[in-house]
Length: 431
Image (cartoon, rainbow, N blue to C red; front, side, top):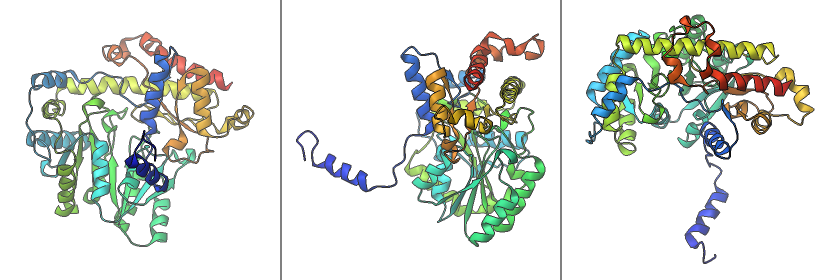
């Protein structure tokens, strides 16, 4: 023991050395901080690493937040009754699903709601496709639940197959399982087609799997054609969403969850118990503002439509540019992500001492200022040369005020200069 630290610090350090369950910082948040640090040091960074909406928060919601800024009361743990009614109505109309206010839970972002569900379950196997969002597996570990990776590939459009799910369940025998599905996906920007989703739902039904449908990007499906998983498997699909992506309000931290009545009262009671002992309630002004954000109006429809059009144009352009350079990429269905595959450049990259996705993205950031996240952050094997590209480094407020149909060359807009520069720098670095 030293005088400068003390016994408590020494005991803590010894415990850390024996603890195999440490949870490192989220890769998505870490790349954002690294990008900010490099920018503060004068480096020009193209921020394709952090998936934050570039569009401004829906204006009517901002006005409502201002009006209710002095609201300070603790609200019900489950969420403001008026907000739960509004959320249920919003999703019934948007997704053609049977959301009911009594089964809606409001939380401080969908991220914590996801964790609450995993924690609320008795011993369960958490099935996670790979690639998948960076926090699913760490959340399972934090909740003391075993996470099982189901690997997908470029050839399968990064989707797991019904046969793959069925074989896993047959091999493991009957037990409680939670399958996490995210569509449109992070990190891929892709969704299963209707037949593929229906087949997955049938396998889930056959084996009694609970499905956690993370549909945070659903309102940003580029064609406005997202098919909610609960339409195919209503009795056991828990759906989460929130304001962070489609409403541009990530920092507001408001998420929503729908728990189907067929899963019973015990699960809902456990979720409310976790909420009451952790976050208590979401900030009052934010819940009041969300009542406005979740109200279907012509203004909201126009706001969503303009985002979808721009994101589709940008995503299609980025995908085409990368494919033309020999970097295999599926054009996105929704959201603002691509998941490029660099396998065709393996020999060329190996000659430069690059053998893993982490080495690839580190060198790219160092030598070009283009920030991506490695495929290994999303559950892929380290040697798989893939990465996530979030094409969000543009002035969303400027683009939102323009109708691309009225522009002669929408992709030449000054607001998109950083996206164009980043894609060109990536292509030139590889070639």
